[in-house]
Length: 223
Image (cartoon, rainbow, N blue to C red; front, side, top):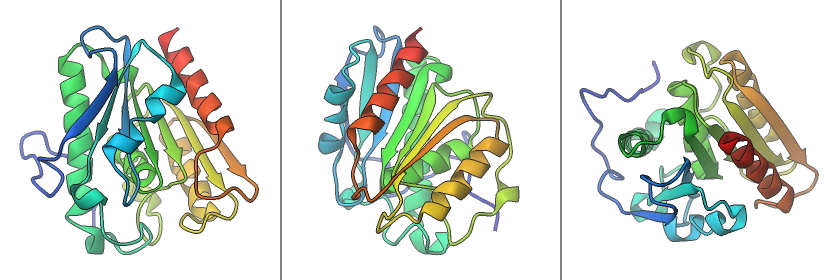
């Protein structure tokens, strides 16, 4: 089964399309760059947007979309993809629409970063791998590509050197480190400039080193 990709002429309509977004930082018309922050299972846009304060970058526009019922898709990301529909496709469409609206406000795709945590990291990395282009950056905090196994031949295109950071625990209860390794391989094949760090014994969270790395990615983007 070929992977769903957003069709601009035929937008997907699903559970996440009419949910709210929360913003922080500069307005899109005044910002030099933007970041889309995708929350995890059971979490919220209001919680996820708090990372904007941690990154402390006033020249960024931050936007966090809200998933319907606080969940992008119902089952583990390792389950067959069809079990997690229409949530996956609806979430991918949501990210696409946010990128389009940010671009319309004057920030190019090459200055837009995608960042997700946990379920949100799975969705954000999946979006970038299915829609490769030059992005400002892609960050997967404790996540990886979706599906019971990675179908490497399904991912085609060029990320044109987009900086990608994957960070995860060696013993994450939800994200096998092998899937993080496979996700790295896919992004390498798509021409990303990838950094991966596996943290020994870390719980399912975001640590200070990961914050510092992404802050550096943001600074590099502005320069």
